[in-house]
Image (cartoon, rainbow, N blue to C red; front, side, top):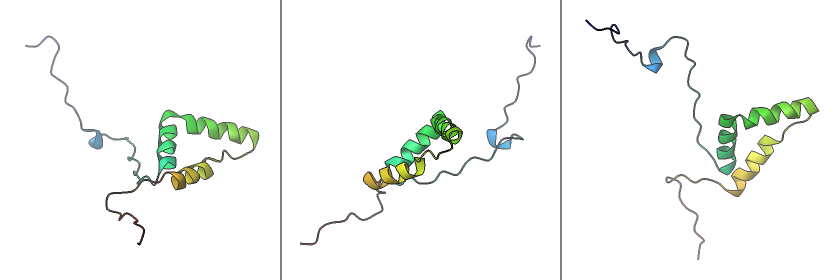
Length: 86
């Protein structure tokens, strides 16, 4: 007989009730998408958006994200590289 009682059983995360659906992960197009994901996970994005709402302005995050994606795009390995025609 054990002093602590029976060992609790573990329920896999996906079988628990009340857990939210996992968010879909979209492919990152460039540096702007990477920075957006980091700021979302750390809570910086919600803070900046709330400050902008208080001032009655937009934060400009989407414009900044698109500009960074254009400056530093990520290329998948399946995409052909552009080579100059000689």
